[in-house]
Amino acid sequence: MRLARHGRAGAEQPLISGADGVWRDLRPVVGDLTPATLRTVLDGVDLDALPVAGTPGRFGPPLAGIGKIVCVGLNYRAHAAETGAAIPEEPIVFLKSPDTVVGPDDRVLIPRRSVKTDYEVELAVVIGREARYLPDESAAAACVAGYAISNDVSEREFQLERGGQWDKGKNCETFNPFGPWLLTADEVADVQTLGLRLSVNGEPRQDGSTADMIFGVHELVRYLSHFMVLRPGDVINTGTPAGVALGRPGGPYLRAGDVVDVEIDGLGRQRQIFGEA
Image 1: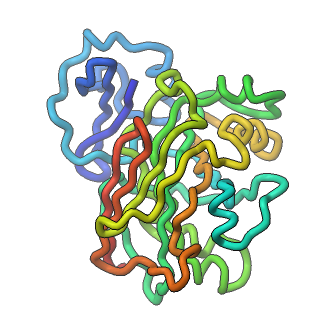
Image 2: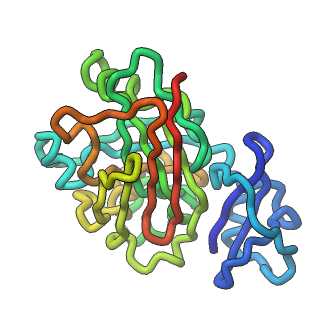
């Protein structure tokens, strides 16, 4: 199934789509897609009983009320190499505030005084069951509700040159376009073979595969569950492949007016126009 939310920002309505690709109105079952209602939908919905929604308008984030966004840095071998970093022995973890989340095609704001705003296509994992002290990857897989696209937008000067932790370069407003939909985990045959692509103004910048991950998706869920409780509606941004501006001599970094297109196999596409804050 594909789960989504459409409509104007702040007033999105829930949608669901099955094998026929037809979007249906999910409101007869749940008022919105949230951590509290996600399990109800995942446990089974009679699609034929739901009204057809027609062509969706603006897609919002596919989940409202996200609890936390856990991000993993340097999780692709080629990305670590392009930035001159050693392969991590354990996952590098930081948090991103849920209020950075916007719709997949919403405007993204370049922070004031920014000179190094960067892009990062990432596979996002949405948690569907509470995960704490998971024993193995099989148990971790059972806790995954599904997958979506995140663009983990970053300001590299804020992140790396201004002291302290990475948070200053990761939590600027609008810095996490998310969606357009959540594809349930049962629809993904092998999460470690998905292609990820990103272009800026039509120029390909990133073209990678989850096969290049240092720590696989289910290992990340297992690992994180030993440091924090993962709850339904939490999101894990699992890292980005090579091709970011940080790894290119001279950038170029993003500027107002740039158009960024993002896609992951089976998870749809995003398009953001960047503007000044």
